Image (cartoon, rainbow over all chains, first blue to last red):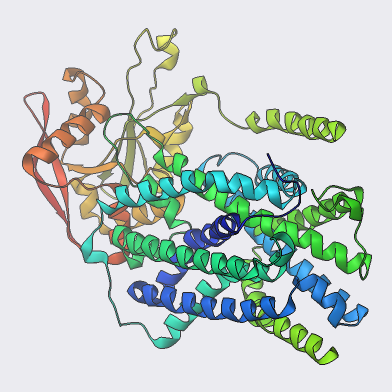
Length: 375
Length: 209
């Protein structure tokens, strides 16, 4: 069934990135955008999408110029200690983001499906399954999401169509009443949710040689798709709940489905059914960051040019990789528990705003320039 | 590889039974179809209407019956907590169809605001339950004797049929909760009256700020 060469097709790249981008953004962003700018949240989405597109363009130039993936380029371009430091930072950032994704995932499942269950148990099982999926390698994951793409897409479309019948046009707007600073804050949040496109600089290792430009085109298409889905979702949420109510909701997209009153007893818990959309999209996001957390930490601590069980790179198997996967999973679990118990969400968002995002924007350019200078 | 799959399967199997530990079994649950909120002076009163389970649905009809009196409290939350203690089963509100406020309760703006705030924070009732008003909650509960099913289920079907005939839109709890934040629309809630042993949609109650 698989080519077993640890390579994915351009179509699979597109579908993987769509899943990675729409999970968190459609779930968490709408209430924050309504908080900052209500009706003008639509402009914030457009502006955030534009920023993400420019960021992707910048990363694309680097990918084409590197002629290899970012980790391999760092090995050539930087002294060993600096490469390890950068890899360790990126690995820990990936694990922290995986932890945030796992926290949101477990929280949504607990609130929407199994409110009486223990958060820790839900989190443990989710991370366990995610680790198993990551262990299977990128090829198996992308094949699964390739198959699921239309299942999820049709589910979202059904949700939009049903919700559109209950739109309250009085609730749409107001427009052009928010300050530019509020719209800019919303745009930065949209940009934050698009940060998974950073992974594109590692993707040349997983696509066939010579297909880097097509891969970048696929990621750009995924970004456009995700922004379009987010804009439509926000418009529908605004029209269904109104800006005032929307900003008080934790997961308004999930609440949207519980608002629907279908006559007869058919599909009484339609909202539970539609939770499947976010199950798979958040699962994809968690897998992405758990995967990179494992790979980058392994490279950082195992040294320049070394990989555990190098002969096993094709399927991601190998004792060394399992050890690092286990370690990254434990760190992810710990991070998610901290988000839940100590309410570290604001700490994480501040880290992203003042440290994470600036470094993820500057780092590829700095490393690329260092490599050019070294030549 | 075989050992790993076995290990993974064993861990999953070990974990699965733990998922059922804290859930209430079906026979320990009751399913209110209608919730009533009234005001008696300064006290808020809360009660629920439950379906009668036929012999074919439940082998022990006596055990399935739910009998809890209307409870009062300073606030809706207090009345609800007292009512919860009176019930000998865990109430599952996922199937709730109708939420009825008495006219007296709606005129007590403070009590109504506190109730809306509590329902927003707790998510106690589903957002898609229909919200109605009546002037006599006791008469509404009594009318059940003459109805083919429990009041909640009957009213849901009746209101949906009337909605299309009258061309008026039913209001659900989600809309009431959202409007408490948006302040953009004037809601018109169906007014229920009991006449000649039947329940009728008799005009609308305008919910003002």
